[in-house]
Length: 274
Image (cartoon, rainbow, N blue to C red):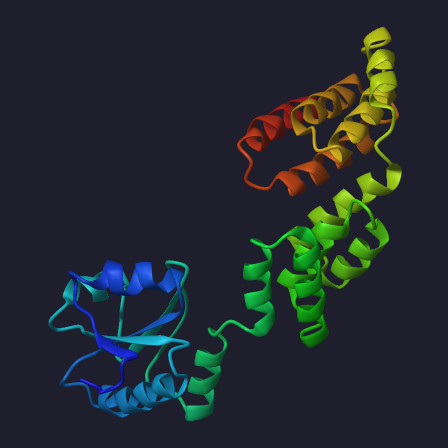
């Protein structure tokens, strides 16, 4: 057992708490080894020293596979030493065997949050003005950071859609970037006179163009339930605006992500198209 506070022995009873649960706070690296394994005796001191040198930014959990076979089985270990990295409760990377020191260092460093990673996490709990300052500074240090660019673009998209586009444009076709671009498009078009558009649709409910205009205006205001209904109706109405309404719906699905309203709307869109 290492004297380092960042190297721990883990068994089957403690794996959930000490690896899975703990990985929501900081990365946990799992080293699966056995006494009889020669390569394990080579890798063990290397990875223990490398983790200790990172002074708590990552924790190493040592698992003796002979004493804890169910852990090895659950991770589908085929050979040892095998190393898994856990973040947010999930295995995010792994390797088998002994690897060179520079490769091991890269494996560990890739797990450690950068300053921009930390800024994104902190910004979620800050007032919008403070979050904008923090994210702007983060991007000055890491200009290519996707998370910071998307988070900042979401903050400014309503008042400055051009800036939002510039922030996420280099990250296309990432889904989060595409969702921001859809929001920027809506913001650029303006919210429209929703009451007048509603009155026009009430007078001509089969007017696909009117439904499309109202759906876009509602989406721009974040009134997604009604926006989905009118955009779907615009597709179902057919005509020259059918494809544009379909494209708007796909963009709105991107904004909504895993929202439970999306599957039903997708099914209705498919019926309208096919």
